[in-house]
Image 1 (cartoon, rainbow, N blue to C red):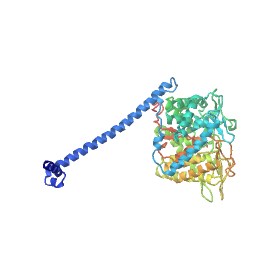
Image 2: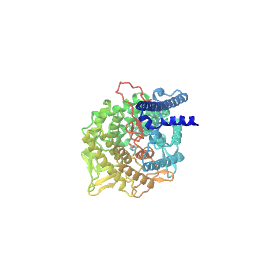
Image 3: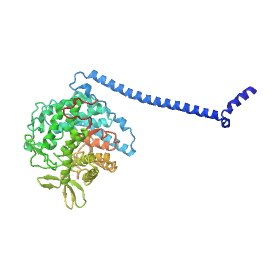
Image 4: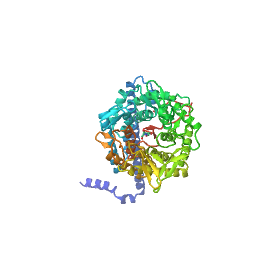
Length: 560
Ligand code: DMJ
């Protein structure tokens, strides 16, 4: 007992601080030992962490290679250069997991629910057809039977995480989509909806079937550019390749229809390595640039033989709109580099022209963009022109500080006017166009609403670029008005009159492609389809921005 007591008291004295105070050498040794042990533990933890990260990365790479291997096994003999074009799928769920405030999350879910309602109705009553007529519960082929709504919806489904629905749609594209139809298709509509929708689905999912189909339809459209000037005819037969312009234009091509294929066809060249798509569409801009007016405003009709414009309306609304949009967006798609500088220059010239069309209403001083015929300004603005605030905001950062502020302010003023197009009607949904009379501010002209996206598109850009939550509130109000007036048992319909609220019988494919997508993104974190990495085509299909090469430079696809 005595021995035990004495050995434990020996041990205990090492825990007594007084012991070390009397022995400084031992205290120093103890301190050194402590530092040494801490360093080893800390270093090992860092090593473990680093290895864990590395293992995760390797796992992802293995997964990716396995997918590639599976695809290679299943897809023998496709015409697209497979090894160079295969893409890694974009994991929206990962970016989306970044926490947002609960109201945003709740609103995002409501918009997703709206998409599900629209899509489920389409699946049930119009599967594979171009558009759903919700009241009569049937499908119609307004675009030649190319599955316009289905293709227009692919990326929206993907972004919203509606995976089963996306999968079913993909299977339809793979097994049932057939472009071999003797139909005179609109080059513009087919490009922005079908080529754009397929390319976007490809960029997001990495699935090669979408690229093959995009190539198939683009090849059928391509002869439309075989005109003496290179300005395309606006309609082409998908089987025979005969191209023409509609009689009501007097044989002319339409500005927006001829200058809104650049993003999609350049993207197709980048993804296939075949220069022919890019060459055709870029030539259009070179031709127009030869006679580009000092104010950058082009009339809506162009002669496809001479490549010159005729005396006709100048507008940022119907038939003019997306020509200006694509000047800016090709510059963004081209990484804002020297080879695409002329797009930005043309766009800036057009913005000077736009300033000359800007007027204010009386008495409330709403800012609007008028139209022009000859030297006369017409006090009218289409809802279609409400894409302009978003475009101007998007382009504003490319200016120096003063102009940047000036244009951003203009964008904000115009967005307020567009929001008022909605707020000023009984249903709180905008009419198709507005007229401005002194003393009366604005009155609705054509009073239908066909579920168009332009105003919410601009609200999306302005919210992303300014961070001002007011734009989310406005978007939410517009969404609620759609829910109240346009939601029916089997989908969503337009209104024949925004004041009486009488409904029509059509669910436009752009409601799923654009309106609901922009609303969803308005309530999602900015990292979901970041504007630094993606550029939206005019049908709201995001295309991935990839390195851009000068003509004659390396043209092999760079996407991996
Ligand atoms: C869409 O097809 C596109 O946004 C196009 O640029 C204009 N018209 C509709 C939507 O309103």
